[in-house]
Length: 290
Image (tube, rainbow, N blue to C red):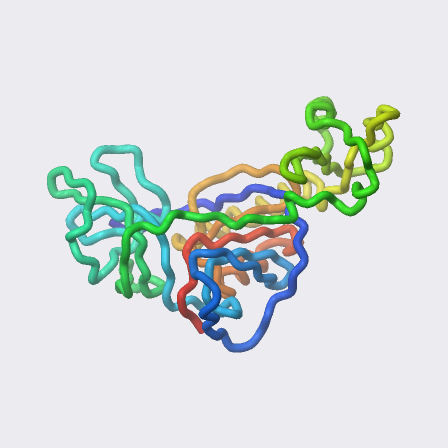
């Protein structure tokens, strides 16, 4: 089954992290687990990838992913773009050459399927990849962005905070503002991020005894929408670039791609006016590359 066109998952999240990327030839770091996310910065964009490589490679040559695989008679396909709601299930993805048949967990008629963690060559050639190794499924993980849980520096002197519901009520009452509420400090403190005059919003919410933790967002809704629109055409041109999804919120344009090597990230960065609004996450771990 040939891979279907995929649509970018474009969302928004507030993540203010500081870290610079390394450069030079990629080298193996045996102390880093390939199932754990690491942060890179590429041309202003923030990139999260599971990798054992010290540097983010220009081009990945081997990747690892936990996914459903389905064999409908043409060989086991990796379901990168999700699984259709049918029985037996269907999907589109490259065929994994060299994968044994003994591990399938479900069979109906001539169709076999199941979840597996596979390490495979990359990129696909003629809609197929070669198996490097396979194993029982490794639980999927997602990057833990610790600064979403940290108290903003401008709020460190507040002793008694305005509560979460009050901030949410303000957000609901001001739909024309680019704003959102998040919780920090083990979900004990609420923070409102908003565009425009932050001091005026803070003064409006302070009730005498309590003070509101209000911080600025990075971009307006119009700028974020423009960034999302810039990416729409890009993902239709490369069926292995992005995963299925849509929508956005908050103040970062979030893009989930199958393999976030530098060549892929460069395509995304070049498509937008403000690369620093991008938060890019690679779904597959990069095992090797150059």
